[in-house]
Image (tube, rainbow, N blue to C red):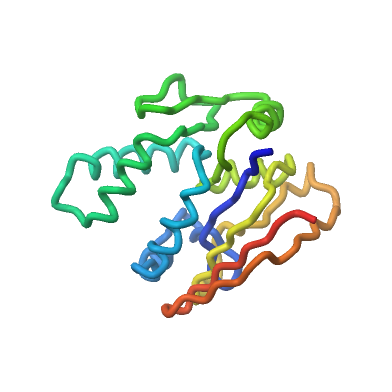
Length: 195
C-alpha cells in the first residue's frame, strides 16, 4: 500500500515558519549535500500533495525554471520531475489548476487519500503548507515523517505539531525512529514512521 510521507523543515524550537510565513531561516541552510540526499529520496515518490499557497509558489517558480536553461543542472532536472509528477492540491477556494498533472480536491480529504493509498504506484509526499499539514495530522493520514531540523531558533512562528484545541483531544501519537542523518551544515533529518 502506498504511504503518505510528510517532508518538512522545522526550526530547532519546532516551527515550520515564522509568524508571517517566513522561511528565510530554511533557505540559508539548504545546500548541495541536502539536495543530493533529497534527489535520491524522491525516486520513491510519484505524487506531491500541496496546499493552495505552496502550490501557487511552486507553480510559479518551477514552471519558469523548466524553461530557464541558465540554471544549475540539478535545478533543471528537478523542474522536469516537478512538471511530470502528479500533483494534488487541497483547496476550498480554487476553482481550477493550470499546472500539468494537477488535480484539485476540495472535500472528503480522508476518503480521497485513503482511496489513493490503495491504488498502485509509488508513495506520496506532502510539501505543505501549514494548513494542509495540520489537516493531515488531525485526520491521521500521515504514515511517515521526514523532519529536517535546522540549527536555528526563531522564538515564534507556526509550529509543526499544532492542533485546534476545540477539536483535538489528548491522544499521544507514538512514532518509531527509522533513521537519523546529520548534514555538514548542522541540519539533522529525523525520519519516523507510525507504530
